Length: 329
Ligand code: SAM
Ligand code: DTB
Ligand code: SF4
Image (cartoon, rainbow, N blue to C red; front, top):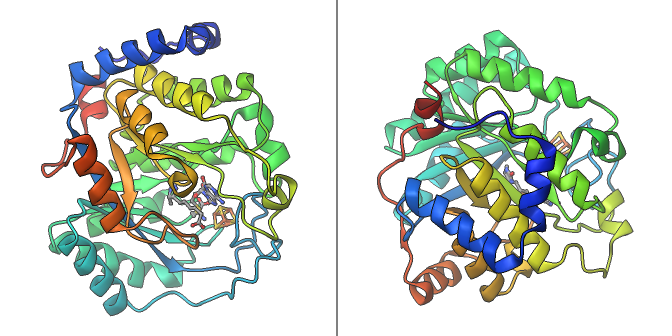
């Protein structure tokens, strides 16, 4: 039975373990619940870029950011499906579509649902991240064939207001509940390296690990400092998070949420191969592939293939079907 009653003290004690003990424990948990030699490959596409009314301090796509990004319209369904076909050909298992919206407008739902249905018909897992959802929108996405909805809590409840002021932590939880009620799997994680304390990282993982059901996917992003964003400018040229502390965060996520896929997400571009290898050792078993995340650069397929080959890891082919959900039942 997967535990959802973790205390902050317990997670804090895990963080405090000697590093090799922590990684060893995380590796044990990883091996007990997953094929430890396999890594899930996911591809991202920004289906609607820029011009977002929210003020997330890390994001290049906020209207408040001076990142030079030009606001675009929602992509055509055909162009999205062409990108999905490319991702599939490159070996990706999941196709994640992101839109720079506070929430989708009902007039966009038809096109968005067509995208979901088209990508699903190619045999890819479907994921979308469109901001807040109403219950009705969540059900429409589910009916169209959406497998996963990504909606990050980003940081601890206490630190949230320092990063984003245009919505509350509770509003994130409300959308997650709508996603669950509609019967979709949840992808929910956050960002480290935003000037948060160790306690905030504990609080962030605690919030995830005490949800009524653990998210099936937990993306752990390292802040990509984008010029013109509040956080990008604040931390320009600084080391955002110590590599060892990043690996600790991955390890604690793995131990606290044994069934979940833990995704080494944004920030891999600036991470050494050795740090990424430690993350895989500590239980990360999913990455974003391709040469672009949403608006910033990513490692690229050939670099990733070389890294996986060097480490003797293989791309996951069969979906791990909603493990965390099954375990909670
Ligand atoms: N607008 C939707 C929302 O915020 O829910 C979806 C798109 S948003 C770009 C998806 C996630 O990407 C954010 O929740 C955040 O965790 C992550 N993200 C955005 N910019 C980032 C950055 N510069 N570095 C690391 N992660 C970032
Ligand atoms: C997530 O946690 N990370 C992805 C995905 N979910 C949507 C997005 C990362 C974005 C990184 C910054 C950018 O490229 O704009
Ligand atoms: Fe908008 Fe999402 Fe970026 Fe926040 S993270 S500004 S909601 S696109």
